[in-house]
Image 1 (tube, rainbow, N blue to C red):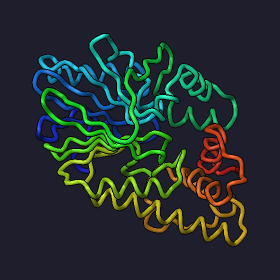
Image 2: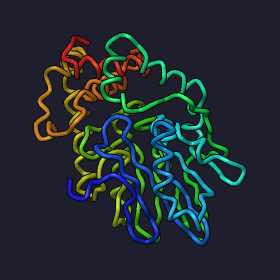
Image 3: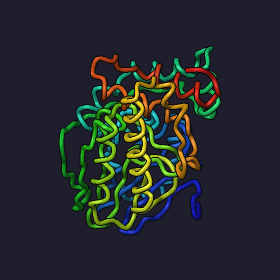
Image 4: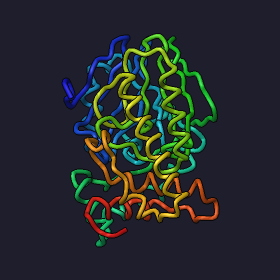
Length: 314
């Protein structure tokens, strides 16, 4: 992953990205778009220390172009728990309606409680997220919501918000800067790590990848991992299509979710990190194929991922 280093990266066209290697659980990316005298920030980070570090690194760019708009690409905490460090009377926080419904004080407390569990879920989350500190977070939810698409004016520049969720989560949004040919994808894209489908269906995640591929782009900033190009998008799309086909085949053969996961040979996708996400992704396909099956909550999804990663029965 040449050039994959922590810190701000200049994408050209007065667009920037903050990358947080190695892009694993909680290690998300942000973006900054500057217009005439103002900036738009794409996402904050999982906790206050990491968000403060990111904002300090952007300071040379925002000193003369203060942040006046914050867009949260979706409702997972590693993309908005740091909002309070940006929020203020002069800052508009924008997210999709579906994302905003989940950006609540309860979401913060529930995620913090997962870190403190004494079972395998807590063990797993501590192992992948122990570097983060979820204390002191005061939720700063969106002050403006939308559905579908929304054009924002950032100092005379057009920034297009394109809702592609439900996909990874119920309210995923792409942030497209047409004049710079840059897109910030949120967690529609994980680069280097396996994609993750919390909400789905998987077909919607595939469609979101197709939407990215339809754009004219010179830079693509994933939610996690290094900067990528359309080949990186195609790899994510191919993984999702593989999971959909193989899980459907096993569903039709009468295999359980656990049997389906255990029998899958990931082939060229085996090099991706966070392989345990296959357990949640296959479950999502089964839920889509069987409408009578109760939808798993985030705890059950994490439990299945943890079991896979720890080599335990689901």
